Amino acid sequence: MLTLTSPVKTPLHRLRAGVKLAALCAYTVLLFGLRDPAALATAALAPAGLIAAGGPVFARHALRLLWPLWPFLLVLGVWHWVTDDAGQGAAIALRLLAAVAAANLVTMTTRLSDMLAVIETLLQPLSRLGLPPRRVALVFALVIRFIPVLSDRLTQIRQAWLARSRRRPGWRVMVPATLAALDDADHVAEALRARGGAG
Amino acid sequence: MERNLTHIALFAALVAVLGLVPPIMLGFGVPITTQSLGIMLCGTVLGARKGALAVLVFLALVAVGLPILSGGRGGLGVFAGPSVGFLIGFPVAAYVAGWVVERWSAPVGLAAGAGAVLGGIIVLYPLGAAGWALMLGKSLTQVQVFLLGFLPGDLIKVVLAALITRGIAQMRPGALLSRP
Image (cartoon, rainbow over all chains, first blue to last red; front, top):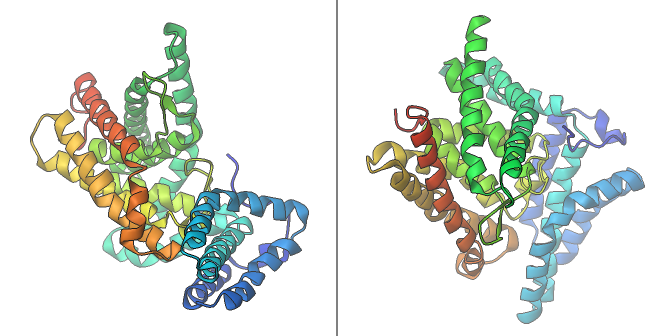
């Protein structure tokens, strides 16, 4: 399966994941402390500049990730046009765009495995409470492996439906799909136990 | 132990898959996206604790950069966006839905429906609205109108969650981990 990491290499790719995440936290806190539209516009230049520096392919990828925000920006636009308060509307929209763009930038420049390593590090303290990070890593690996498996299974179930009915697949396909997940879980659990358990 | 892990993993994968497949069609031609239905099913089928953990694992994989949130969204950006309240509310909703099915000894379908209403609407909506209010700079009373737009679809999903949970209990008694 595709991840959201950009294949276009930027200098940000070489930074460590922890450093980027810490910078992102600091930047987001800063954004929420600012009220003035001009100050927010200045702050928004940082992610905008970094995105532009990545070249056209990288920038197009970043803009595509921002696209789902359009309904919210539309609501903000209409709202502040009606209340005649464009300045505040611009401030809120800029903060939203800058915060999401900066977070996307970290996702686009960090490999999935590096992010997972950060999560395992963050979960380290939980190992004393009986949750070894190894077990969490196993669960993540299982999910990533089983997304395509369950996706194929659901396709088969839909095709079986289409072979029997003229109508499009309805909610009833969800029952065998959920049962497939339950059955696979039992089989994988047995296989894990047969190989020495989850540790 | 292994069974708990694999159930959590497989249901996290199921929620992810439900965000990738085309929406299912209701009898009268209304498309329904199924990811939030999957969140409710995590609770009503797996029970409170495992259901909530499955949703948390799903969200962790969204955060590390898999495009598995409905519409192919993913990455840290969605947690900085206006829908963050709903994302935080998802595991809570699954927990509440599972808790109701575990505790209320009514017929499975009824308990699952009640759990889905309590978790997926009564608990989830205020959290989602709080996220909107915070990210869009509005007050809670100002954003709550927009919730009404989601209500019809979510009520249909509540009914579907009840029917699917009952279907599983009928086809495979004992498979419902929320009713040991």
